[in-house]
Length: 294
Length: 171
Image (cartoon, rainbow over all chains, first blue to last red; front, side, top):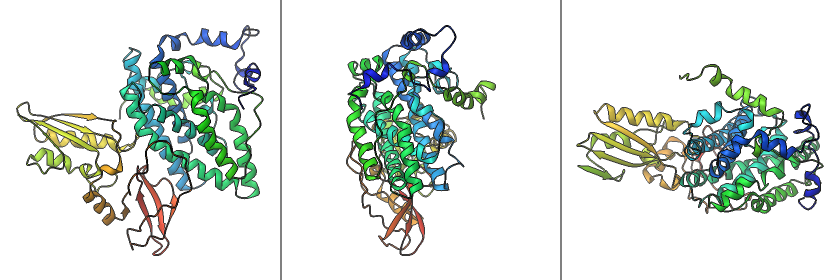
């Protein structure tokens, strides 16, 4: 999948980029636009910005999974997806106050979750995509949990004690998320014609968002240098992908061909269309009633 | 005088006993000491303060807020100032649960956790995982749902007596 990457990344991913092309922005390289729009992210410094990526992935996916409450195919899934969401929310809550210490702003968890605008979020595009059918959610969870499983394992001996603590707890939780997604992919893939077809479509749907998880952005590389994490994102890929491929094969599904476009830019604060709507739902109460408690 | 005590060491101090005996809000048959989330209670009698260290079971466990306020209540009714510290590392494990706690779970109808699997990311397999029914003792049970009424439990059914029951997951 990665062999022809240099060729493919030069293309413009249709979901993320075409929709936000502005008049006057045409002809400019995407990277140029990114560095201009995210000077605040870059100014935060390596450790804080790196942790923000980890925390924002968890926070945004927690919000997406929360949407399944009362919408899952059975009540057990309402509870399961709610519990996975809660684990991810807890991981983000553990990290945000630490980021506030590291970036010198002393912000708390609500400041990060409720009072940042879209360009200040560092999550990947996979987690912000709209909720699709249940198969699509399981395909997303399979990839994301496989990624997080390797990521948190690589942070267990982190030079940052808070990150090491969060990772130590999270790695146990994520194993359950991965197991849950695996079982559903197996059941749906190796199920009826209808479930097989939809599970295959879901695996295909997720493919363009996968590279971004394992992209070596400068802040991740800095984090490796600083001992925050033992491995760069690209080094997590082989094991995570092995889990996904083995599951897909066992589910009688096939891994998709290399996708024709790939998401990118999330770590630089450049997001796809669903992100603004997600933040509006997440933040509007806190912003309408600042300081409210109950 | 500052006395640091292991939580389960049968101390005479009423406040330490009271804090140790606080029930888990979601599984009230087990105390926070027996659950293993109460890590340390340090009582400074001269300064009239008590410092309590707790470790959450799961990152997002909603019961932690309630546990914290119960600890504050137990201290304040005895005229003590209290500081509740949350400690993430080392991460909580079901291996910290006391035998007494596991026994209480079993009596309540929740299958207690078995020993924890090896640490680190392991290749996940469809494994045969034997859990004994807390109602009839049969080991012929099936998992219905991976996540039960709380993050720490799975939902199972006994194939012998047909009763559903919760299993406290080993982690």
